[in-house]
Length: 302
Image (cartoon, helix red, strand yellow):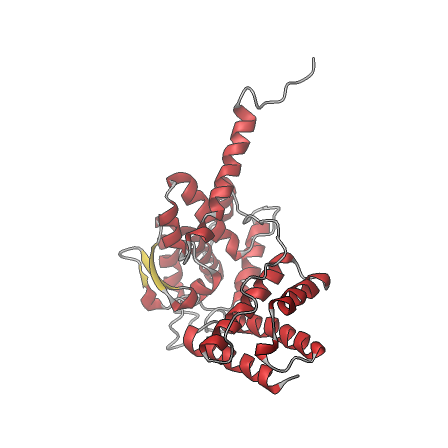
C-alpha cells in the first residue's frame, strides 16, 4: 500500500477529529470506507492520488456492489471518498475530484419505522417506583417528547435541563446546539427521576442519566432496557431508541403540517432529511382513503 495514499487518509481523518469534531463512531466508519479504497488502489498499483480518474472510482463502486454492499452502503462509501478528495484538493494534493460525477446504484427509499400514537401511549403508560424504572420512564418520555437522538440524550448534563421553562439544551451532530421543548409528561417523569438520581450518581457526575455504577449511561443499556419494557407492555415489534424520534416527528408533522418547525426540532441541517416524514404522513392518508372512499373500497362479490 502506498505511503502517500495512506498518509493522505490519515491526515484527512485527523482533520475530521479536530475541525468537524465527529464522534469516534463516525470517524471509524470513514476509516473503514477509505481503507477499502486504499486496498482497491493497491490492487491496481496506484501510488498517487492524481493517478485516479472517474473510471477508477466507477469501477471501485461497482466492485463494492458486487461484493454484497447495498446501494445505500455504496452511497455512503462514495460520500466518504468525495469528502477525502475535497480535503486533498484543499491541501493542494489534487486538482480535481475524480468522484464528482460518479453515481452509486439506486436504492429503494426506506421509510422510518414508527409506532402509532395509541401504541406509543401503551408503551409509556407503565407506573413504577423502582429507581431504574423511573429512570427508564424519564428516558422514554423525553425521547418521545423532544425527538432526541440516542447520543444527544446520553450526552445531557444537569445544566442542560430547565424543567421550570420545560426546555432542554441539546448538542446535536457537528456539535450544533439547539433548544427543544419538554412536554408535560416528560417533565414530570424527569422530576421523579432526578429526585432518585442522587442515590445512584457518583459525586461530581453531571450526566442526567446514570447507571448502577453511578456514571453516565451507555447506549447498549438504553437499547436493552427499552426492548425489555416494550416486551413487558406486550408490544410485538422490536422497539429501539430511534423509533421514538421517528414517531415524534411523524406524529408532530401529522398534527401540525409544519415541516420547517419539525426540521428545527429534529436538528436536521437540510429539510430534505425531514421530508421523509411527509411520505409517512401520505401513507397514513392513503390508508384512510382506501378504507373510506366509495370508489376505493373493494366491492364484495354477491
